[in-house]
Each structure stands twice: as structure tokens, then as C-alpha cells.
Image 1 (spheres, helix red, strand yellow):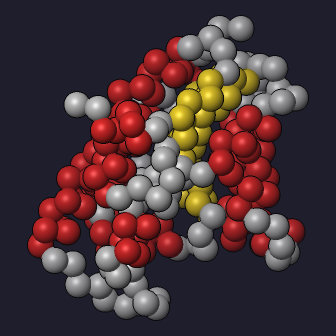
Image 2: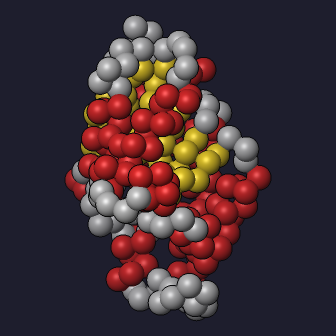
Length: 214
């Protein structure tokens, strides 16, 4: 089977993949409640602006290949809230890009099936819907980028009975800091095209050792 960039769908996780949620939590910079105003020190604003630029570059590169989904296990509205607080340029890109979709796997699952399940179950169901809608006919790539095994496992499971779809996963490290996320986003940006033209399934993992190399 030959991979076809024209039939590529890219799915990104949000927390600890594009947004440095663990790092923000460690520095007590997450909102304590909905509507809570968070004061960011200038140095934090600068590093988040640097990250946001790299995230925007990655999302734009992904959209050049096909539809892009940001699928989070957090409740609906968190991606938009995080963008407004920490990375407004990413929020602006999300708002003005018709091929860039935000999905709360948890909110969708609970609205469809009721409460229950976990992140793995939620993401498996959502990726299944995405694949069924985006790959009606023809071959293609389902690309997943995220820090947890939930999206990695879901991506490979979804294509088990779909020989015309190639699963391409890139797993980020666990509990990254903001600079590690920036480095990983940059690596993903440089790898995306090569992943899509590879003529087989891919299961790639970034390690901290890779990030430490000059």
C-alpha cells in the first residue's frame, strides 16, 4: 500500500502535548476555577509565546496535509480557555481555521453514551468516528501525536480492521516541562512529512535522551 498525503488526518492531544499543563500546574499557574484570572510573570509570557509560535507552525504544517483534530480528555472548553490564558495566537489560529477541529473526547462520549469510561475509551471512540468520517474511500494516514498511550493505542486499534488506513503515531515524553514540549513540537514539525510518506504503520516514541542531544 502506498501512503497518500492527500488522505492524511492528523490528531493531536492537548495537555502536555501542545499545552504545558503539568508545567503550569507545577508553577501554580493553572486557573483555580472557571473565570479565574491568572497572572503570568513576564518570563513565563515570553516562553509561552515562543512555544505558541512553534505550535502554530506545527498545526499549519499538519493542515497542509489534511483535516486536523485536537482531541483532549479534558472537559469541553478547556482548550479554548487555555489558549486565551496562555497562547492566544494558537487560539486565534484555531478560531479562523475551518480544517482545525477541537474535540473533548470526554464530553462527546458522555453526551453520546452517558458517564463512564476513561481517557483510553473516550479517545478510542472518538478516533473511530474520525476515521469513519474522514476515510470513506481510498487509502490514507491516520496520524496521532500525544504524550499518553491513550491516543497511541486508540490510533493503532482503530485501523486494525481497516487495511486501507496506515496508523502513524508519535508519542511524546511523560510530564514534560515547557522547553521539552517546545523541543518535541519542533521535532514533530520536522518529522510530519516523512511520517506521512512512509509506506507502513509507524509507532515512534521520543525519549528524554533525544531531547538532551545537542
